[in-house]
Amino acid sequence: MAFHEPWNDAVAATIIAQHKAQEGATLPIFHALQKAFGYVPAEAVPMIAEALNLSRAEVHGVLTFYHDFRSEPPGCHILKLCRAEACQAAGGDHLATGVERQLGIKLGETTPDQQVTLEPVFCLGLCAVAPSAMLDDQPIGRVDAARLDALLNEVRS
Image (tube, rainbow, N blue to C red; front, side):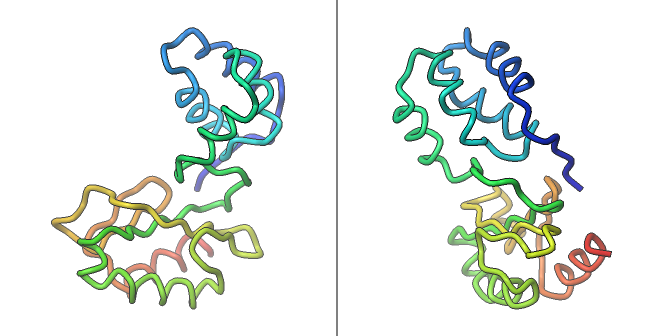
């Protein structure tokens, strides 16, 4: 289960200050903010822009370019399904359709009870054991519908 603290501008300012001297600090700041809060809050964009002497548009552009950064809080559990070619060839599309039906949401959405966020990911590096998924940062190879169903039931109970 992913634990993230609620938005706190003092914590965000500390995180930004810790990384702002790094070369190419924008991505390390985004990663650190997402690790702390589970997403990169819109409130952080002007703070980052000011710290890095960038425009808000530049920061927003980088943030929205990378699909791994969230702009909304995730659910308690994050299930990522690999959507790359090897996983699609091994039944990933069928698997995704089944999980969407089971959870009642589409890829990129969070269940209404905020328990599970379902995200597409484009290659987990597990092509040899496709189809693959990642549940709360734990990679899962050779996943099938029964295994995913069991894992989702376990984390939702």
